[in-house]
Image 1: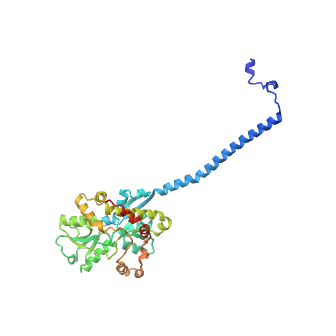
Image 2: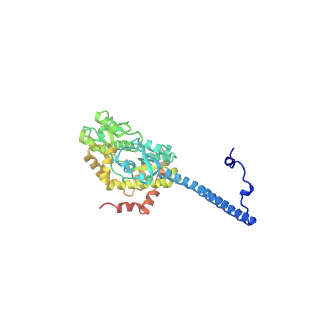
Image 3: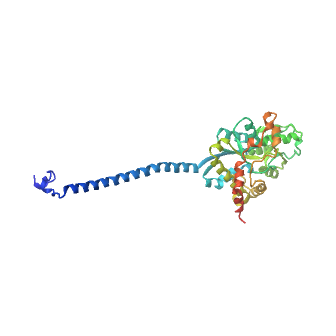
Amino acid sequence: MSQSSNQHRVPPSPRDIPAASKPAEEDSLCYRANSEDAMKLLRREFLHFVAGAAAVPATAFRLAWAQEAHQRVRVATGLLATWQSTAWLGAEAGLFKKRGIDMTLPAIAVGGPQAAAGVIRGDWEFAHTGTLPVAEEVLKGRDIVILATPTSEFSNSFVMTRKEITQLTQLTGKKVGVLTETGQTSVAARITVEKAGATATYVPLIKFDRIYAALAAGEIDAGALPIDLRFTGQARYGWNAFPIHEFGTPSIFASTRKLIASNRELVMNVMKGFVETIHLFKTRPDIVVPLLQRYLKIDDRKAAEDLYAFHVPVFQKVPRPSFPGMQTLRELLAPKNPAAASLKESDIADTSFIDELQRNGFIDRLYATDRK
């Protein structure tokens, strides 16, 4: 084996190691240098550890914020009607999305009582429904509360009759199509017919388009229909229209007190989007009319424009919950539930969100930026 190959295996001899001068001083310097290097290394590792530990909650916070910023919200409507279209219009126009809310409408035109019941069950967080279903549920001790009344009280529904029936008194013994047996529009239609002195049979058909089709087919003699379908029925079939008087309890937008208590910020963001959608409705027909055509399935652009023009003044700039027919509502509910006699507006409504948006100038700023 050659000497060169052995050099990697044989330890160096003492003569290959240079002799040290001042060995104690150099050992001390080497020790200090090594100690300083070690300390620097430990310091860097410690700082990396601290930074990493600090980043964990920050990352968790950012993830939590991202989830909160894209909160999913579900909304139902009792009716397929312009005055219950605010949530759908705002979702389609992107007004809720810009506030980090992914709004969907899993249940449209399910009937007022069903829309209210779904809020209570947690099937959806918000609902367009009537004041009557909310008051009935509150009297049962259930959690649902009105946040806004998007429109003022107006004749939004009609008892439509066949051409030959020219007076409501002629409906005695006849069939009248309604949405449900207990919904606000259905109850108001029954009261309207009864006040005219007629005793009719009421047929629940769940949706307005079914009532319309049944009346067109002659399966019923009259039906409760929204203004959206009134003009179509008059033009196509010559039907007669009689306004339904809904005892001063307008259509409303509701949620639960539990959600308000647990996530007031979310509810406030929804209400901001809601108010912004009303502003959009009142000021941007170029956007709203095509959306209404889609929502209500209206092919005739002129009919949609007329419907839009009719509703513009009834949508409220400040949709604070208001119930001019509160006493009538008490009288209607008292026979079934005596506690209704002492029912107060504050029992069924929370005005604080709309109050705050008006007080802090949010609503006024929206309308101050209207296009001239």
